[in-house]
Image 1: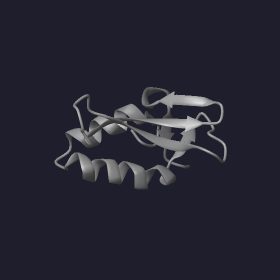
Image 2 (image 1 turned 180 degrees about the vertical axis):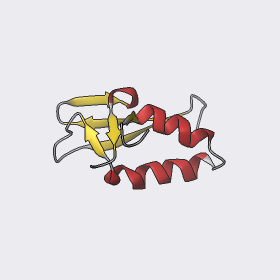
Image 3 (image 1 turned 120 degrees about the vertical axis):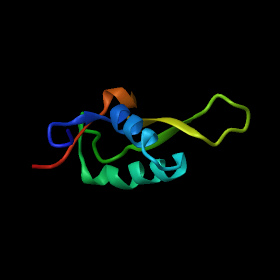
Image 4 (image 1 turned 60 degrees about the vertical axis):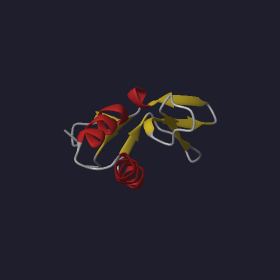
Length: 84
């Protein structure tokens, strides 16, 4: 699956269904992004944005987006694959 590629949304969903806390899953996803070839090409400047649960004061991450100088990409629009 990772060799052929998957969306960031699919990775997030898989990690959140794993036997990890959301905090651990978010940390693992964030740490692991450098191991993937990301499409579309994000260029040199990009920032990972966290989307939090819709509860007052919640720090529970439910999704991620990638902000670039050209706009923000939803997790379903970011494609990840392992380098060949």
